Image (cartoon, rainbow, N blue to C red; front, side, top):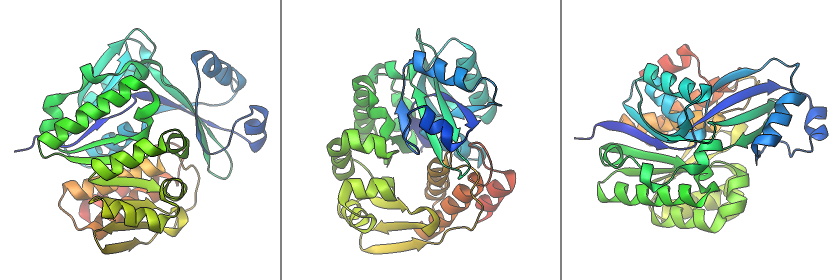
Amino acid sequence: MKTFDVVGICNALVDILVEVEEADIKALGLTKGIMHLVDSEKQIKLLEYFSGKQLSIELGGSAMNAIRTIASLGKKTAFAGMVANDNFGERIRSRMTELGIKASLGQSIEPTGSCVILITPDGERTMNTHLGASRLYTDAQVPKDDIQNGRILHFCGYQWDTDGQKLAIKHSVQIAKDHNTMISFDVADPFAVGRNRDEFIQVIRNDADIVFSNKEEAKMLFGSPESAAAEIAAAGAIAVIKLGAEGALIRQGDKTYNVKPVPTTVVDTTAAGDMFAAGFLFGVASGKPLDVCGVMAATMASDVISRIGASVSESALKKVRTL
């Protein structure tokens, strides 16, 4: 009998959201719409640049966003990451306790990681991540018991940022395989795919049971969303290709499901993919058909992009629970 529905391993971060103008992105020399890895000095300078702006602080990290939302939907979850004994680390610990998430948080001498998310008027987000403590996560912190007692292990491509994190994922994947735990892999970001394409393809072909990718990432991996869906399905995994305003494409074996988008006004795309994954994994953990899982995912994603921040509304949670 499995104890947890979904177990996540990811960067444990605090998100700092700022509404900005296109000119700010250009002035800072950033590439719009992707994730930039920055050191602590650059992160401090970035925050100083926006010192007069209103900041919104939330828990972050791709898989953490998904896990805390799955927990809010009522499933039993666990999360593993690395934080420091500082204010951000305590914020993460207390919030996870509040949500009933079993936390396996290693403690580091480096500060808890943070992500400054710049939101332009078109709703696009440009992320600037200082991994901090997350960089020190290794296989020594892997929660073996949680993984072997989980129905699904979920992680993302951001874990390929350091050798220690990659080693931790490889160790976690082997534990999952040995104990019949499904493996869910979100490739996470074009930046991550560009740096690790060959390794990601190996994970897809050899390890994953569920693969999440957006349109751009799918093109980088296999040439097109349709080709990506076919390649992933041929490897024996469920392909979940997010197509933005066009909905999503899900494929398992020779069966394809087209998920219609849920109409909404885009305010902030932060965590859209994470909430899509949360809805889909909630559906899988609930034993729902893949087309219903897709509707759950689209409902969550459309709700989170309709407001600033990486949290869905209570009405969206209720709707997904009743699907």
